[in-house]
Length: 136
Picture (cartoon, rainbow, N blue to C red):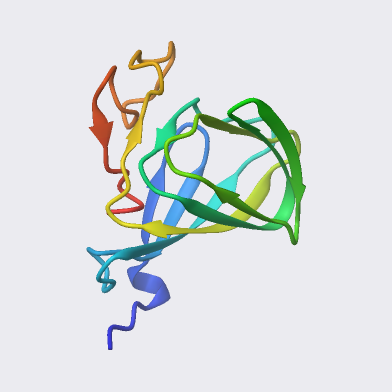
């Protein structure tokens, strides 16, 4: 039974958030990933879709999730189930922390197969599908 010590958690930083991976197929799990998201105030993730369902549990702060044709406001204690293959974008005015889980591999992609302007180096390009480091 694998044990991943806090000192072994993998940290990935993007311009919008820090993801700390607690378990994934490269860290002891056979097919699931579990990570912590810390998004500072005033940040937003890119518009993207994922090939697998994700479950987000918000621990602190608030977030606005633009999902398909819906906009949801979430706060500490809320749980969000994001279906696979639907466009989503997460923004925050005051910052948030969340724990997220999904099957792995789960690939990120651009719903319109066009790289958004200002996409960071870790984002998928055009029609490419990318396994994020925090899910690998």
